[in-house]
Length: 423
Ligand SMILES: [Zn+2]
Image 1 (cartoon, rainbow, N blue to C red):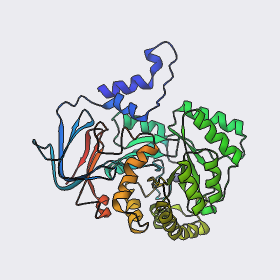
Image 2: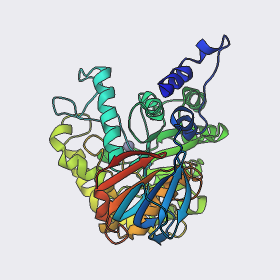
Image 3: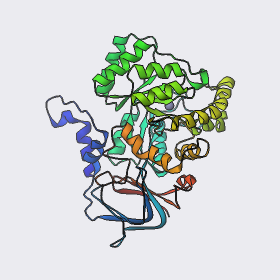
Image 4: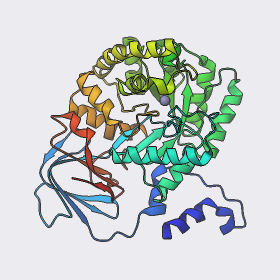
């Protein structure tokens, strides 16, 4: 009840004050603290065989102690009576997906949902909530959605504690209009900020199904990423071709998505400019191919589109290998989860190791502390470390030896609250 009241107070600030009040959320995590960090008093002790801290270290044995939603102690030698005794398990920070589309789902006809399929807003929102729940149960405690206007309500309701799901950051509507003047784009970036976006999402190239060539001009990209920077906002850019990546980096954008056709020159350029790179090795392509009948015939989900995605699989794996071997390049974790992939996000981690040649420990670091850093949340989430939010998951066995253990996350804590404990 307390959290419900807090939610309404925040949702209708005009009732509480005669003056118009603007509500902005500079730090997405402050929402969850305000709304639902409850009055948990007794410390929670979680004991497991080992702790993977998300920063590249493995601690053998020990306890993690949680109080008031935060990690307050990491005891290398177990002491005291554990609240959760996870013998045979490994603790990790909650996983983070920098690119997940919670609003994508299959409708009751078993087809990819589009705005014209007759589903009601209620059906769509419940489907989103189900996607959020599946994602949290899979061990992902934070996601970034690029993006949909509906994300905003889901973000707030999850933050209130009323709906179970990962912390949500969203771009709200992305920018993909290639005909807009730079001044118009700048104004729309400011509007998106006012609307409550956490990040600006831009399409600088076509879809992989349409060849991936550059769409936005250099001037448009400069307007978007320049204005976002001036407004203190991050930018993430869909870009497949090397020229679209180069244009985006030179325009001052912060993060590049996908990059199936990235050559060595642009990989190095991203590294030199400190631009985060969020490539995908397999899940997004395989999910479309596995669910072909549910997508086929809608938009660019046609014969040529599916052929392009089939061709992308080996290209993406080869590019990923070059990316992780590019000195200084910050390769973060994003799945581009769409309908059919929610809750299977960890499959992308398995591919990164098996097809992309990354070590399991590096893949885990990427999907935790490095992705948190890309969101400017490195001091809040992404590691099992003192003072951070208690976003902690557990898997049986040792994920640094067998990455497939992450397919079965059996314990999920977010902000000190246990959402799953199914050993
Ligand atoms: Zn996407």
